[in-house]
Image 1 (cartoon, rainbow, N blue to C red):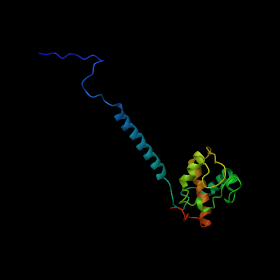
Image 2: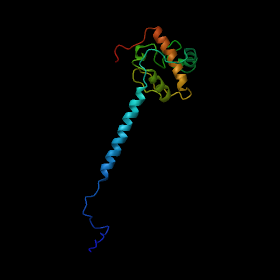
Image 3: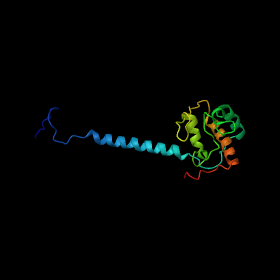
Length: 152
């Protein structure tokens, strides 16, 4: 009966070494795909429809006046500090209801106007923003702003 000699740690094993890069590649791929799925799901909630959803328009008006009117105007026509919401750029197919939610939650870097950045408003809940959007959408509909024809 022959006995196998144990190899010393410093001796080659005769097998090809496993490459750590293989599993790192799979982990990296999983992280990237997970990120893509997360971003896709965050945009899946965008509502391109013209209505303000289930928000309370009267409550939205009070909340808008207290939190938004100083910059966006009591008449939604904008001020020297912020853009007008009665502009086709804010039509639901260009800026969805969810875009308003994200703007309030995270703030906005200017991308359509030459105003400064909008800071986040952490005191507003998602439900309160839904009501503000309902108020804004009701005024947009009254002004005939339901779709931006230059935006898909």
